[in-house]
Image (cartoon, rainbow, N blue to C red):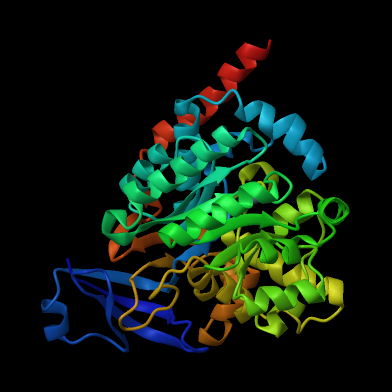
Length: 438
Ligand SMILES: [Zn+2]
């Protein structure tokens, strides 16, 4: 179905251009035309649907490159605790009690929250019921990279089972739903995956031409212990194991030395920067400006709602920009365009997704609309749109969302999910766990 959407202010991301005009999306969900001005009558009659953008802002759908959707119900379950203690006393014990239904309802809540705050593509690393997750993504009509998260602190037999599950997910869903789902391999982290297991992961990655996503160097403590145990810092060690041979995306990269950054650059490794999670868990602040200057691809992630505590990438952009300005006492160090790129073009590159992240002819038509008619976005003209997007917009200002040309949210109503049911199930979970623990 072809669509023409007019009367919008378009942030193309191809350069700093802001255009007042219209877009045309072809039958296959790609942008066919991006033009300034008003469409001709012939142009209007040549498409199946015409939508009046009513003066809204149009920009690429945001790309969240790190999260754990299945644990969304742990939002607010354990705040103000350091990472390792938090994993061991809050996350892992609670997750061990999750049923398939809990994971389904939690993931549905995350999908709803992401769509309602402007995300159209995301990466999910989770260890439970990923087939179910794939089906949820298909129904939601979003775009996703799915990874069966693997912890290797178990017998070799169990390790092999986990790998087998990951590869099966790849066979079953990679390229599914019009190529909107892709599948990657995901060893959880070097501190939960012994070198021998990581070697097995690398073998599988090469065998099936899969890429790898992993947590890496999130806390200083983890890096120190890794060096004590293996005699090498984590990035150097993983490079030696061959983890970066195919494409690799690491989450966090808060504590990486200059030497390790050179390895990341040389091996074309992307970094998913999760500033809010890193701040909340007291893990530190990633050396993003230095890595950016070197040419390392930096994308943005929220991590799970248990350490953030929301999935709003507009907030994430704002934090990514502000914390570095404060840290370096330099307001020029992370510009507004830098962080918008992290949440769009760089995210597409990090997830190995071509033709995504820009409003340009031939690109996939994943885009969102923002209603600027709210007090916190006044006054505005084209010269202020970029500034407002980074420093003023809230996820709730997003009114409409399209993935591959198909509308999934209209006037803040998500068309592909049952919002009322999802909210009900979320609160039901809390009631059930309260009853179980009392
Ligand atoms: Zn994570």
